[in-house]
Amino acid sequence: MKIEGDWSNSAACLEADPELFFPIGESPTAQRQIEEAREICANCPVRRPCLSFALKTNVQYGIWAGTVPVERARLRKRMTILGAKPRRLIKAKAVRATSQQAKELQP
Ligand code: SF4
Image (cartoon, rainbow, N blue to C red; front, side, top):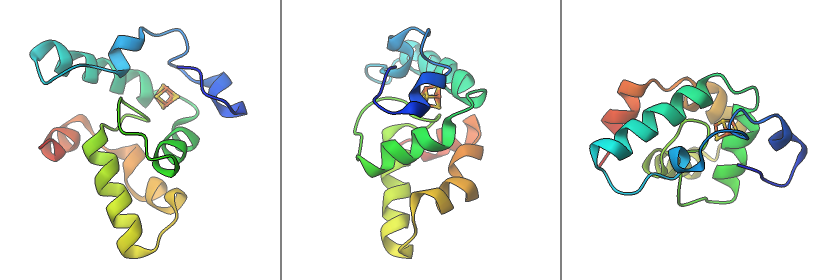
């Protein structure tokens, strides 16, 4: 993915298949794509600014910093409740979310 801003130049997904980051539906293929995208994000040097961007701009689709939309919605809700800034929550939880935790957050 290419997003405006210096951080995106270092994104691990720049050369990845975009379909991994924008899976359609909840099929086994889509789940596999999500897992592959999460693996790429796990080794990305710009996860924090990526997630901060996704939260600030309320991105509704795709995998950003290893999070799916429902996870980001929950993070935004927590931010609203706690009055927290994205950076604090990112440090606290989101970037460290495991695949198992992410599955538990699925609707
Ligand atoms: S964290 Fe994931 S989605 Fe964000 S820039 Fe890195 S590889 Fe791309």
